[in-house]
Amino acid sequence: MSGKIWTHKGTFLLAAVGSAVGLGNLWRFPYLTGENGGGAFILVYALTIAMVGIPILIAESLLGRASRKSPIMGMRYLTESHGTSKGWQSIGWMGAAAAFIILSFYSVIAGWAIHYTGLMFSGSMAGADAETIGASFGDLLGSPVLLLIYHTLFILASGLIVGLGIHKGIESGLRFMMPLLFIILLIVLIYAVVVGDAGAAMSFLFTFNLADLSLEGWLQAMGQSFFTLSLGMGAIMAYGAYMSGEASLTRTAISIAIVDTAIALMAGIAIFSLVFGSGLEAGQGPGLMFVTLPIAFADLPGGAWLGGIFFILVIGAALTSAISLVEPVAAFLVERFGFSRPAAVAIMISGCWFLGIATVLSFNVWEEGTIFHTLFGRSAFDVLEFLTNIMMPLGGLLIALFAGWALSREEVMREMATNDSWFQVWQFLVRFVAPTAVAFVFLRTIPQVEG
Ligand code: PHE
Ligand code: NA
Image 1 (spheres, rainbow, N blue to C red):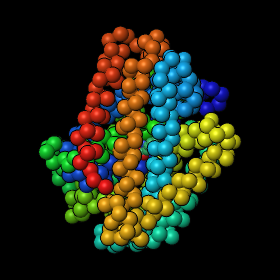
Image 2: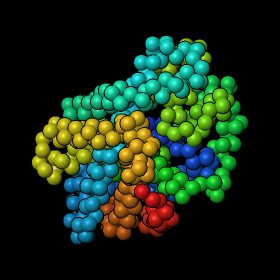
Image 3: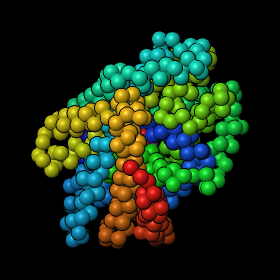
Image 4: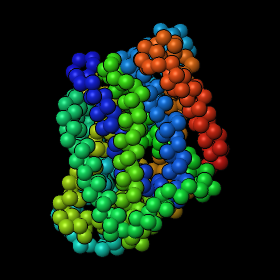
């Protein structure tokens, strides 16, 4: 990000992939799929990626590039230059609110990966059986102090990287980290398919029976498709502001979606092969990845090292996502209240750290049966996840409507630089298909969900 425009044409792609690929693929996708019974969840997830996610990804990077400003100022600029309603500016601050909520729990989960990096390298998991590994995860969750320490470490690291401006140099790190993550994931996948029950995994993941999916499952599948693409909350817009004018929006968006989906599916197939091979429970919740992958590493030759490196890469992938969560909020605080950048980052980080305590406590002190649960009917962590499942698609809906209806045709055509027929396909998707799909899922699910 030296100067206004990224140095290489491919840097936006790299940064966006860095934002997209993270805990959403490795941790959240498998665990939500497991909780929602498999195939039907994946079907809704994949359909929303293709029909809603990709067009909105194009729209969001378009808004960033057309304004060449951070999300909030960018939306102000675009609404003023088009003489449209100020209401669209809510896209900017609502995105900042969503980023704030997401980072608060994202950091706690990334902290688990710090713990597992230590466990792997110490060799204490080598040869351990499923029961021991499960119990050790239980011990981690049972300790609010430990969770808080890791959460603090992770969020400090993200804050320091953005606050010191080092995130601009992270390009080179990404260039080698992403391929390495892919290779280790591939090794794990092959191993899991060989020793686990790949047949059961495939039929679990790819038997599409929509009747299996609960109402909230629909909301979670749609929410996950936004979450995994970092969509609907300004991160992509912020990065799009630095995107080279020559890069193709469409091609870039499709590449991001393909890489992101491929990583999620690889993680999913590996994890469920191990789950069904070891008789574990698919619907066990947020611990799924942290319980199953160490089982594979425990018996794999050189597994302690491989596992250690894998979890370091998980932390790295989570960091590059976390950076893109800090960005829209920091920009908001700078532009709205005139804070200096380091001060803005410090405020954001402290706030997220504090809210993160709610997630920390969700797994122990505020467990089922305690006061929070009784009041809200679900854990604090579930409440935060539920909010993101609503806020991201809602932000995406507004982005689609704004790009589809409010922007001038000339502006869009300049950015799209495409032939008329592709433009029309995209415009049809953002004008009608994406808004209808999001509205459909909202109207079906939200009135039904209590508490
Ligand atoms: N896409 C990231 C992931 O899958 C999470 C994220 C969401 C990052 C929103 C930035 C913005 O892990
Ligand atoms: Na992702």
